[in-house]
Every structure is written in C-alpha cells, then in structure tokens.
Amino acid sequence: MRVLFLHNNFPSQFGPLARFLKDRGHDVAFGTQWKGEPPKWLRMIRFEPHRKVGEKQHPYLGFTEEAVLNGQAFARAAWKLKKEGYAPDVVMAHAGMGPGMYVRDVWPRAKYVGYFEWYYGTPGSDMGFLQPATADDLHTVRTSNGPILLDWAACDWGIVPTRFQAAQFPAALRGKLTVQHDGVDADYFAPRPGHRLKLPGLDLSHAEELVTYVTRGMEPYRGFPQAMAAFAAVQKRRPRAHVVIVGADRVAYGRKLPAGDTYKKKALRELDFDPERLHFTGVLPRSRYREVLLASSVHVYLTVPFVLSWSPLEALCAGCALVASNTPPVREAVTDGDNGLLVDFFDSDTLADRVCDVLERTAGGDEALAQMRARACRGIAERYTSKKLLPLRTQLLEAVATGLLGG
Image 1 (spheres, rainbow, N blue to C red):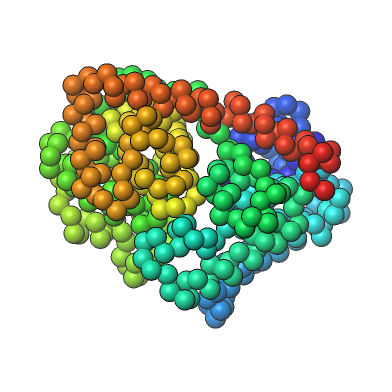
Image 2 (image 1 turned 120 degrees about the vertical axis):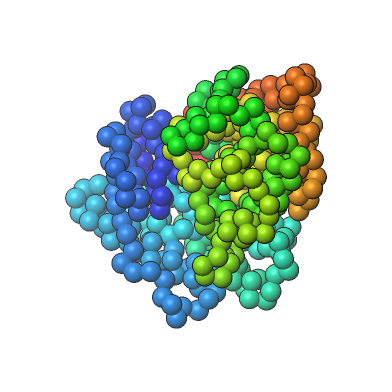
C-alpha cells in the first residue's frame, strides 16, 4: 500500500504505525505542520496555514476556521504532489482538525480513513463537568462538530481509540467506526525494579518516595489543581516524598486564566510546598519520560470525561501504582483495587490519602500492592500492547484499501 498520514503534529498517534508499515515494505508518507528533523526512513510533507484564525471571527466558528485553514494548507501542497504523480492508496487523517478535509477533492480514488478522537457536547462528557455550561458553551461545541462531521461524511471508515470515546458519537454515526486503541510499547515501558531517577539537572537517585504526574498542559481538564492540592498535603505527611511533574505550563484543553496567570502559578501562590521536594521537568523526550515512570513509587492521573491519555497506560505498563480519577474514560482501563486505585476527581483529600497509603505500603513491602502492579503490567500486555494492535490496524487499513471494509 501507499499510505499517507495527515496530522498537524508528529509523530502523534500515527508515528508508530507509520514505522510499522514502512518496516513491512509499504510506501509511507506523513503530512504535518511539525517543523523538526524528520526520520530518515520517512517522506515528510510540510504544510502550514497562511494565517491564523481571524480576531473578528464569530466565536462559535474559531475551531471550524482553524480546521479550514489547515485543510486549505494541506490541499495546496497536495495539488502539487498530484501534479508530480503522487497518488496514495489510503489516506489516514486526524479527523476534525482539518488536514484531511479536502483530500477527496485531490485524490477522489484514494480510500480515506478518519481517526476520530471526540464528538463534542454529549451529555455526561466533559461539557459542564468542571462548571455549568453557558448557552454560548453549548452553541460553540455543537458548531465545533462541523469539521468532524465533514470528515465522517468523506471517509470510507473511521477509527476511535476507546469505547467511551466512541459512545460520544451519535448512534447513527457509529456503524462506520471501529473501536481500536493505538497501543503502547509494552517492551519499551517494561518495569525495572529498583530503578532510581537521574535526569540532566535533576538527580533524585536518593529519593525513596517518588510521586509522579504527567500532563501535556497544567490544566483543570487533567485535574492539575486537584493534584497540586493533594501533593501539598502529601509533602506535609510524608517528609521524604518528592513530587515530579512532567509537562508544559500551558492549557491544552479548556479555559485559560487571565493573561499573565497560569494554573501552575496559581497553585504555587495558594498552596504550601517544600520547593526542595517539588520538581517541574517541563516537557521531556520520550526516553527521559520513561525514566520518570520507571522510578515512580506512585503515579497520579486525573481527567474529566474526555479523551484518555496514553500516560496512565504507560504508567501501568511500567509497573507504577496508579491512583487515578474515577471517571468513565479511566474506568475502561482501570478497575479499582485490581490494577489501580480510583478516587473522585474533585476529592483532593482522598487523593492525598490514597497516595500516602501507597507510599506507606510500598515502604512496608506490601505483597497485595506488588500483585496489583503485576496485574496491571499483564493487563497492558494483554489488551493494549502495540505488538497486537499495530498488526490489527494494518489489517484494517488493508481491508479499507481493498474495499472489504467501507465503500
């Protein structure tokens, strides 16, 4: 197959699959706005919108205009590729974000697979979870489904990573969607008992108790305020506990604070921490992020009912004792007391209790806790390992390419 992946970022959800296909003799290209140095094995096609979303744009249409700008940018690059003789058999694009929006116009004979992460505004999801939704909130998210619906109408088939995410889509749309997780590299994140953390500029090899938290952005959607409140309490109760926070001081999802303020600044301003035992690493390369998980005594993951991150699965795979929010996306992968521990998203006090309990049990060599960690590792290998899921996704693409799936 000649497969073209489209995503505004790289490697995103498609990088491991692109490499898997390339290693098996398929012709692979990747269209992206990412500006880094591409791997030697991959043909990378750059595109960039000619402008940003207009300041006078109707607020309901910001997401839609951004998608159109992304789609236009890639379409301009695609028409040039077509003139040069390039024609993919299958295009797989991040649905709703724009780059695949006009693929059908350029290559009408190519099969189109959409990667669908979210459908906005479904009751019981993120909308209204943190605070009551206003009328403008409801109208905005309904309008934001426009680019997603355009991709659904254009695609031959779609992929959704989890059952919870698939359930957000209207029932009439789900018949063209396969639930299939991207997979995590279980071998890469395999546990290393006794591993200690030592990064450039951060040597915690002496730390006996290490509490970890990973996030793209330090934001309410991923429970950052609740986690920080719990970490302040943990530090007071566990004088040897160090807290390591990996991620950027930004908001990836949800509302921002007024200009000049961030949720990190707010937490440091309002809570009492021992700065010698609170460590912010910023965004880490994958290898150093793995080092954090491998050394973790207990890993914390919180999320509103939204897209499930990869980090809790990778943490379970690395042998971490996971304490996570008792929200629907997490419950799909984690059962309280079996392969992790669940707490109410908003209950920072109980979160601190659970973290301290895990640290105490770990120090005492608790066998039940060790067995829970082992079950978590086995569960990832059975349900989420990329060794199983990448071949399945390849089969799905082949089925679409040959017309066995979709139309």
